[in-house]
Image (tube, rainbow, N blue to C red; front, side):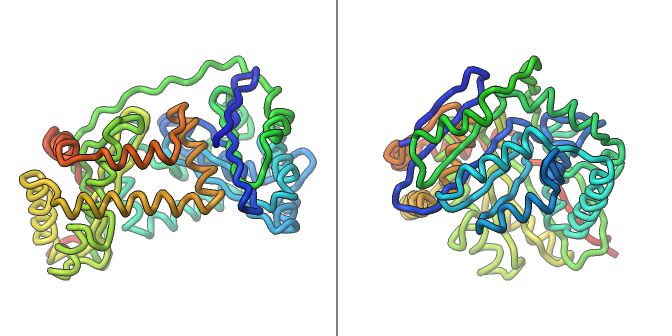
Length: 407
């Protein structure tokens, strides 16, 4: 059972007790990411995530690392387009110690100028590494082709030019306007009693902010094409289709559809592109759900001479889905696979913490396991057909390609 508490300052705490384990995972979720940035400060959410690990008023960066290493804990963070998360997984006996360190990082990070300049170099290298990985960067190009100058089209890492402008004051101003209590969820899962909510509130429940919750503008799907010539061994292709927002009632229908399309080894794309034709080693599809939009992405990498045949094969696979829908076997197997994946995720306190944190942050609600299974079982050929039409029939796709010049 998930317990929820809202502090006086608007911060939300969700806790799930799992007495069968010895671990506790604590996550600090903030409703801000690259979508909340602009053309000047793009990349600040991700850089700020890095800087939270670079020392507080009483701890150095090394102190933070050693504090978790000394208790056998794990600590990490990540930034997405719409949220940022800092989390730690520790033994239940060390849960308050981990919470105290996370709170220290959250409230007391020093943002030392010298540390900032060193960390900028680290992120510069991260950007360069990303640029050297065309099968990653092509997904950023697809976001730009799909959303243009809308912030959903921004790269999460930003650019070197953006990072050079960041100062300690820049970070503090961004925190002041976006790290407000109502934008924050603390998610706890593991061998922990409900009374731990009071402990969390003692660390996070008393800060305040006068900043208003930042509003975001709804994107328009553009159906554009972006091509970049690069001296690569393969052509890297991404095709994007109109998807569903995170709160859509049809999200499970789309998840099942994606699973059949390219989400597994038995999927149509994997079988048609790789197994039957040998056109690609890597081919898959996935769905990204945002607050008010979604994007279904197909990716494949192939030799440049085979690119036309790859495109034709993908198009034929999609056309076949639009014409005939799913078979009974595909629908049945995909449902079972989704339910199995859901059940297996329950064995991880990290997965439960993440699911609860995201549900609270983005949806402000939670489903029980029985409710989720019921929703999966209720997916029908008719609901799949409606999602197919919405996804593939409503708008032309966007396309991104990184490939060597031909000829």
